[in-house]
Amino acid sequence: MTKILIFGNSGSGKSTLAKQFVTRQGLAHLDLDTLAWLPTEPPTRTPLSAAFDSITQFTAQHDAWVIEGCYGDLLELLTTQATDMIYLCLDSGQCIANAQNRPWESHKYASKAAQDANLSMLIDWIGEYDSRTDTTGKLAHDTLFNCFDKSKEKRVANQ
Image (cartoon, rainbow, N blue to C red; front, side):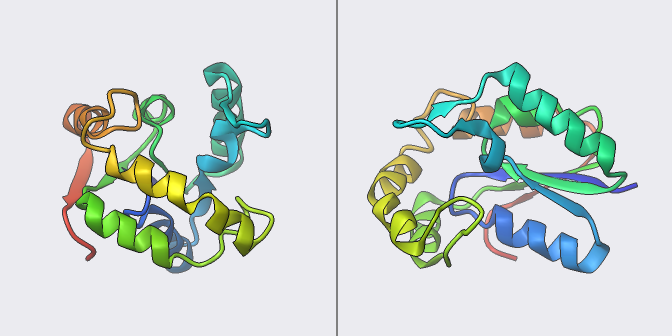
């Protein structure tokens, strides 16, 4: 069964690509943004163990899936199960443009206005991708990709 991990910077096209796999192959889809954060103000990360429990429930319910996100710590937990990995490695300028033009993500925001209110922070965060030292940065993503020993692809532009 196909089990795909897709990762990269915010705005790199992870959700768009995942939806293509859902449409073409009927894969179940999990966007890690939906479980990586607690609904607090300001948002705080869900404890890794709780997020992994949610991921485990998802993977137990689906034989074939695509999971996408920027959270290297969560993705790393899935590398033994995954059959394929796709790393969307676009430059920050292209990711920013994509974020500015993305449609309303109703599974993440109560309204398009709420999504747009977060855009300035998101653009700043996207621009820090190359220098971030946490599990969401380029260094962590490069390491995740380089350590994966199954079918993998690095896309440096929208394909």
